[in-house]
Amino acid sequence: MVGILKRTGLAVALPLVLFVGWYVLSAGSTNFYAPPLSRILTAFGDTWQADRLQADVAPSLLRLFAGYLLAALIGIGLGVAIGLNRRLRATVEPVLEFFRAIPPPVLVPVIMLFAGIGNGMKVTVIVFGCIWPILLNTVEGVRAVDSVVLDTARSYGVNGPARLTRVVLPSAAPQIAAGLRQALSIAIILMVISEMFAASNGLGFTIVQFQRSFAIPEMWSGIILLGLLGFVLSLLFRLAERRALRWYEGLRAAQRAG
Amino acid sequence: MLEVKGLRKVYRSGSREVEALRDLTFTVENGELVCLVGPSGCGKTTLLRCVSGLLDPTAGDVRVNGQAVDGPPKGMAVVFQEYGRSLFPWMTVRDNVELPLKQKKVDKKRRAELVAESLDAVGLSGSESAYPWQLSGGMQQRVAIARAVAYEPQTLLMDEPFAAVDAQTRADLEDLVRQLWKRLGVTILFVTHDIDESVYLGQRVVMLSSSPTVVQDELIIDLPAERDQLTTRAAPRFIELRTRVYEQIQAAKKNTGK
Image (cartoon, rainbow over all chains, first blue to last red):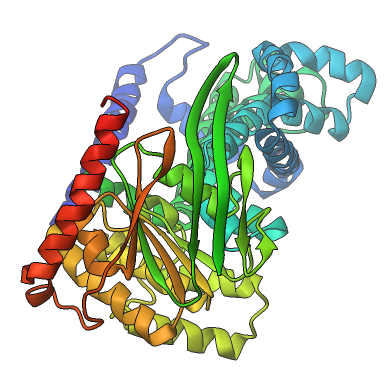
């Protein structure tokens, strides 16, 4: 119990110091572009009411989830196929490395040409940007499945779909999860960027609108909201990951102890 | 009956060729317990992978009850040396034992019976819900043996199964193998590098040469069927037999200049 309190205390301490520091240092600020935190917080309460959450935050989140889920499905699906097939891997791996090296925001204007400026474009941008860590990690994870594990599965007749769902995917799961974790933060970045380029609603759009209309405290409050959103999503991800990969944590702890 | 005839395996990588097995011929009668023993690095594992249908031989063939082996045969189970890699760490003990049975389309009720019986037979009742990595090395190898037993094989291959457990656990597990063999009437091919173990366990010992491997000699172990770690290992006949095997293994090493 004391341990948990201590850990929570340590985790909360630095954010608290930063927050208080910002609050105190900015209290007397007369700079128009860096208003006191107290004003930003007031703006936060006034700005992010139910109607705006529904009008701007909900569409952003929907795009984010649609793009992220699609990227996960395609990335894991393709990754398994590539990881299991040596010849396919040799053929596509250099190309994948090339695509991965392209900074995804660069593609926003290009994708706009093809997919317009609607939700389709934003989802496409998110998929295109965050699929790479998922895909490449899945390929690695599937390729790295232990040869003894595969021999065991084969000699006990674990073939076909069961081989995939009961052996290959669980074995690659820790690495796939690492890819999914990286992809989540990329997805959030791309959600905002795609909305900044061309949109009529959404978080990125709203923040740019505030900036252009010199509603500076509101703009800052939007940035804080984005930060909180990213934080909560990664927290949820970690919780889900810890639940799904409890065996992996245990295995690693056992290996360290042994 | 398990027949190995003229088995040869050459590994090729580029222009380099390594002849692991040169010419192996031996048979194991139904219900027999035969130990294969040879110097380290004599291609025992290669041989076992060929016999279990996991590896295609370069020449010669393996037959189980007259049927040529060209993939893992149905009535065969394998216990691998690396229990830590052969058991699936993402599954509980129960699921590990049950998965091959599911693949064999054994119905649910019978599956539960087989899992319970086999875990009971290896002395692990009550560990069904544990994960393999929560168990000691010896217990993990017991789970692997239970998985093989539950599979109800006619032929059981064991690849240096006790090489990685401590000496006392090893003695217990040797007795367990003898006891299961007598009770179930399976054919067992037991590969080991431990000369005493081969004499203690087997009805017959097949000695292998160094790589490129041929059969060096065969020896009938005419010890009583009831064996005991204390009295059998101290019996003059046991010592005679182990000396014979030891001499042959030494001779095998000399022949190849190692």
